[in-house]
Image (cartoon, rainbow, N blue to C red; front, side, top):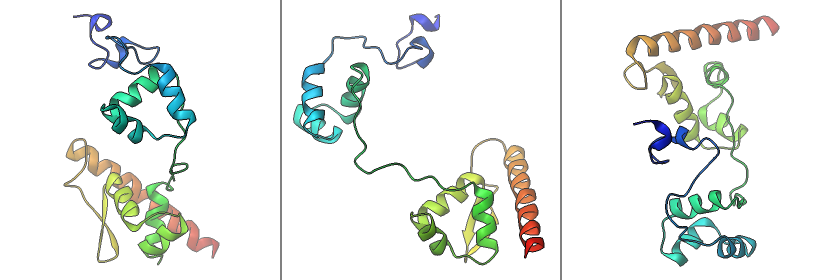
Length: 159
């Protein structure tokens, strides 16, 4: 079946101009606008209406109603290379987390996404977990290792 005839949730490319409702809207734009203007969060609207947060979010998108983030902007960590360089040059994971305003577990997760893990405070390879084939994971880790070595060498030359 051609993607343009498929349901939007199955094929995102079927509706390239954004979300589209395939059934009548369950929540009116006026009600959602009133709730958002009053400062209600998505979870509160969902609880009051009996719908899931996903349904409320979908309706907000369909009606082009923006909701402010309650938790503030999402914190971004530096690239894995910078994290590994800092950890290998003596910074602890807790110190690194405090520097970037996040938690130690967020640092560990960022390392895990790059194919590394912390063992006894040291950064080691983790080829067995991750996405892609083993050869791709190995190539990605080797590329990061090469960049880490270059960064550490440059740091030592500057000192």
